Amino acid sequence: MTEDTLSATSITNNLGTRFIGRRVLYYPSLTSTMEVAKEEARQGAVEGTVVIADEQTGGRGRLKRAWLSPRGNIALSIILYPSLSCLSSLIMLASLAVVHSIESTTGLKPQVKWPNDVLIKGKKVCGVLIESDVQRTKVSYSIIGIGINVNLKLADFPEIQPVATSLSDELRKEVSRLSLVRHLLVEVERLYLTLSAGGSLYEEWRSSLVTLGKKVRVTADETVYEGVAESVARDGSLLLRSLDGKLTKIVAGDVTLRD
Ligand code: BTN
Image (cartoon, rainbow, N blue to C red):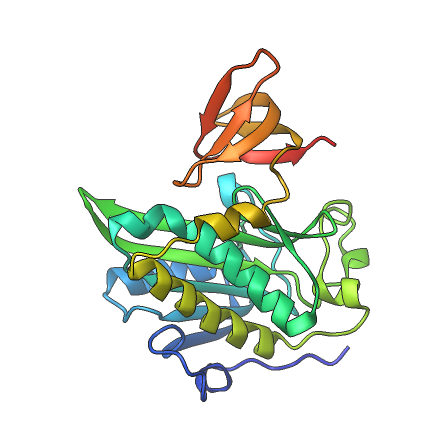
């Protein structure tokens, strides 16, 4: 497979955004884009700065897991300074932006597994990690980290093959990372501007969730819940109906679909 090359200028050129991706820091290899983005944010980097790497040697996932990040995939972090009221909607923003950009670049129809895994035919194609620093009532920064399996041959990674897929495995051809990244940044900005103007992403995010109505097992804070994923609240929490009829609100956790 020939690999499409990424660079800061190929991403920013004629991107058409106001601030997302106007400044791009590109690295061939990095421990984690989250680390560099966090340091940049602490030093006051301009909002919308993107840190992107061809490969990560210490990619981080949610719940302190490692994130496999070899060449051919997309690994990027976006620096934002949102208001506190927008903070809980960033998970919706990130997953919807990924869904929209995969749809428009490839024609595939991804779905979201609560809270923000993006799946194709039930297998994970993208993970989102959001790390924020909040001081009293002010958000110092939020970093949206997005990892997409683009040109990954799952046959080379048997450890994740049962649960993961990639765009190239689905399409049986290589996908342009550059085109996907540019669509993604445009979409992140559009949805962020919607949120900042007081709009809501809740309805669309809820209807993109593959989780609702399904029997699930949720692990949250070392507690395992089982039941039916009944609904999601406007703040993004999952409402789980247990067998005994009790409704539990789960703010963060990991869901396994049991159907
Ligand atoms: C998950 O599903 O657990 C979240 C995975 C998030 C991975 C991305 S890749 C870019 C950014 N840098 C990291 O180290 N992690 C996020």
